[in-house]
Each structure stands twice: as structure tokens, then as C-alpha cells.
Amino acid sequence: DVKVTQSSRYLVKRTGEKVFLECVQDMDHENMFWYRQDPGLGLRLIYFSYDVKMKEKGDIPEGYSVSREKKERFSLILESASTNQTSMYLCASSGGGDNYEQYFGPGTRLTVT
Amino acid sequence: GQNIDQPTEMTATEGAIVQINCTYQTSGFNGLFWYQQHAGEAPTFLSYNVLDGLEEKGRFSSFLSRSKGYSYLLLKELQMKDSASYLCAVNQGGKLIFGQGTELSVKP
Image (cartoon, rainbow over all chains, first blue to last red; front, side):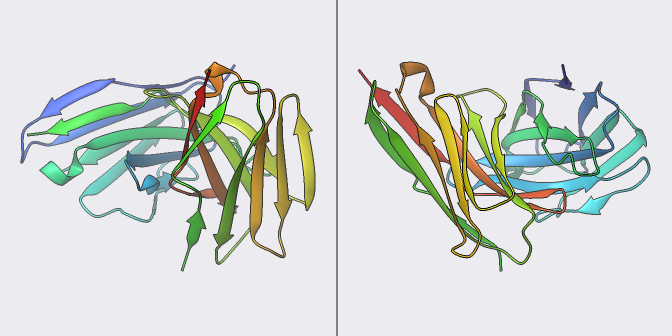
């Protein structure tokens, strides 16, 4: 059974703080993804990674960075949190090759005040 | 540009059949996913269509027409637990582009 875990379910941070969101998957998946989900906008891709040390920008990378030092772990970093980054953040992983199904973590609801 | 459209909300009655439509215009296409997401939970996989036609899986079926840029998810014998958001997503070589989701409410 694929398991994707995220470090926090709820997080409250202040404007300007540096924020780390951690994601770990236990199925040796090649690909990992970070999305944010907002009402009326659906899931939007922030960054993704096809391999360790590799990263690609998604559709809305501004204000975010990522790190993938180990295959199982993909971190999303908000260098200086702003109120418009208040959102639900979802991490996902997939196996690569023709296995495109993405498995999602439970999400982190981040509030920036 | 990339455009994926789904109705925002739908309401149906327990025991009935409901069809959720998804139309897409994208620069690349390798297949189409449907995910289910209950409030406060992670999306979970329902179906994946690569070729045209209908794929049936229990009470849920998914249809794809690549020439029309169109898919639908059909839910039969609706149950209260089917109340959820249904997400349509186009696969572009492993990268998924999601629609805004359709919030389905099942009433008794």
C-alpha cells in the first residue's frame, strides 16, 4: 500500500517567516509533486521532481522553492511567507515509466497571518 | 493554453445515476484521470482512460473521446458516501493538469 505522508496537517505562520513543508513516500517512487489547492481554482502544480537532486517548475512556482536530497523526501520551501500563500498544500508521488497514477498525501493546511 | 472545464456543483438523489462531464483543450495529452476527494482528505484514484471508449469499474464508469476533447464520469446507484469533489486531470507525460473539480451532493 502506497503511503505518502506530510509533516503537518495544520500550520500557522507569520508573514515573512521561512516555512518548510515536508513530504515522504515509502514506495520508491521516481516522481514527486507539490500542489496547492484553492476553492474555485482546483489543484495547481507548484514544482515537481523526476529524480533526486532534480526539480522542474510547475505552473505557479513564484515564491516557492523545493529540495530533493533523497528519493523518498521532497520538501517545499516558502522563503518568505505571504498571506496569499494561505492554502491547502498537497504532495503526490508516482512510479514513473508508464505508471502515471499519482498518490496523494493528506495535505497541509497552511495559514499565513 | 491549457483549459479543463467541469461543472462547479451538481446535486443528485440517492439511488440515481449522475454524469459529470469534463472538456479539455491542452497542448499535450497522454490520458485522462478521474480522482475523488472527500472534504478534508487526499484525492484518491478512480479511473484512467488512454483510449477512446467506456471503462467500467463497479458503480463507476469513465468515458473518453479524444477527438472531441471530452470525458465523463458516470456514477450509478448513488450512495450518500459518494458526496465528494470529483477531479478531472489530463496527463501530459506524467505531469497532471487538473480541472477545478465538481462538488457532488447526494441527497436522500
